[in-house]
Image (tube, rainbow, N blue to C red; front, side, top):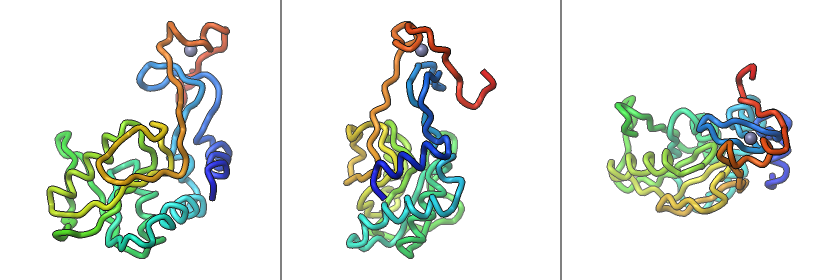
Length: 189
Ligand SMILES: [Zn+2]
C-alpha cells in the first residue's frame, strides 16, 4: 500500500476531511484528521498494519507496544502481522506507564506503534516507560506523520504517510478571510 492509496482510504472513511476546520486547539486548518475512522473496518486496519510490519521483518521484533488509546488497534494489528506479542502503555495520574500486569524483559526488542504522530509526545513517553523496564526499543512506527518527518523520538522512526497540515490562528486564517464557513468536526456546528 503506497501513501496515495492510504490517503484515499482515509478520505473514503472521512478520516481525512478537506475544507475549513476549527481544531480542538482553536487553530483553523484546511484539513482534519481522525485516524479512528480509518480503522473502523478490520480489513483496512490489517492493510495498514501489513505495510508497517513489512518494514520491520528483519528486526527480530519480539513485542509491539502502543500508547493507549490511539495506538491500540493499529498496534494489535501490526503484532498480528508479525506474529508477536502486543502490550500497551497508558497514563496513570498523567504519567505513561506499563500496567495491567504486562511484563517487559531485559533487552526485549520492542517496536512502538501509533496511529498518528503529531508532536511525538505519546510515542516518546511510551518508549521511556518501556526503557525504564529494561526494554530495547528498536523503532517507532505510525500510519500518519503529521510532523512531516521533523519529530525525533530517539529511535528510528517510519510512517506510511507524511502530512504537513497547515494551521492558522483565526485572525491569520486565509479561509476565514475568503469567507468560507469554519466547521468544528464532530459537532453540529
Ligand atoms: Zn479560518
